[in-house]
Amino acid sequence: MSRSTALPEGYELVRLLGAGGFGEVHLARQVSLGRLVAVKRIHSYALADDESLARFRREARTLAGMSHPTVVRVYDFQHRGGDATLIMEYVDGQSLLERLEAGPLPITMALTVLRDVADALGAAADGGIAHRDVKPGNVFVLPSGHAKLGDFGLARIVSDPSVFRTVDGRETGTPAYFPPELSQGTAEPSPTSDAYSFAVMAFEVLTGRQPFTGQGPIAIIAAHWSAETPDPRDLVPGFPDAAARALMAGLSKAPGARLLPTELVDRLSRVPMEAWPKAVARQGPPAVGHCTPAPATIRVSDVPVTPPQPAVAPARKRGRVLLFLGAAVLVAGTALAGWRLLAGPDSTPLSVQRVTVRSEPASGIGQCPSATYEFTATLFTNGRKGFIEMQWTQPDGATVGRQRVAVRAGERHVTARLHFLVQGTRPLHGRAVLKVLAPAGAPSAGHDVTYVCAGSAAS
Image (cartoon, rainbow, N blue to C red; front, side, top):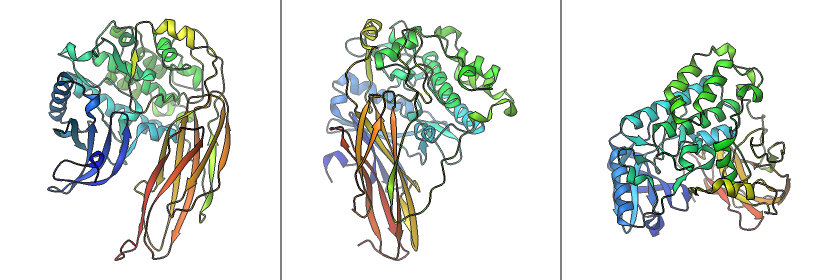
């Protein structure tokens, strides 16, 4: 086992869950208790000095003291070989980000998820903690439809303002959900700034798009500063008046005028179920047939292209903008001037910034006499025009013919699917992988598969 996958004593590796620029997360089994846990390692270069490590340890201890059903628990903190390691509760479910990629949630489920996240933020606020990175990727939806809020990796203890700043005084965060007062440097992270990020997420969950978009992080941040909040009633026909007013109040640019998460959800929940439009309900994915295996299928998101405007961000069918893999964006006070220079058209080529692969069944485990798998890959682009060339490798090692798809300007994701059928009594352990052949430098991603029969052993 390499250093990158070495686990603390008493834990055995199950599989890698994810990795980014600052560390990785593994699924592991705590041997003494037989329970699954998530082991998150933060590399030493992300904790470059003693103050950073002390801050991280202080946050871990504070989070470990939180006990709330809607918060992902922290069990332990260890510091070995320069790296810091958190032992956390493993949540067996999808991120809200992944769930939204399948389409809008049914309104009852949407309100349940938002209520759980609001309760989690309330518990964090009671403990003096600002989450600082509220977004769908940090919300985990359980099979029951309830949710947990996790990844307090950017959390800061509110009672200690000195921990809010980087060495040069700049802030960190995710642009699409970043409160305007933080990027402008006029306030410190707090439950009120978390409330803004929560309102952005609620807007996205209920309308299918983010309220503020733009061509690049600086344009998005500037839109949070100056663009008028779009009215949900203009985006979703029949959207309830009371719900629209509540969302817009939650997105107030004045922190003191915002609804807190529980207040926002209370208002949304008071809207009668019959008042919500059918358009809000999730549309199920099209039925697919079985094959052994079938060629991969590709779908490019249908996103209208609108030239950037200086005040109001362009509208898109689904305004999902994924900018970085685990990295934070650093925001300087001169962002608005930079946005004016960068918002216009440029010659930046198409790039694939991130690739995810999920499986149905999600565990990747099947049993004889036969098992059918459906793999769905999502390729997130920078929204530029160009071509993507890709190729699937099946779990049995065979490759599927290369496929090429044109991407129009403004289209932010491409979906590719692979169907695979296994039959018989011979066990199989493999990995379905989508490799991006062009543009060059794009990442690849895959999903593990295990097919067994009772009493059989892997070959």
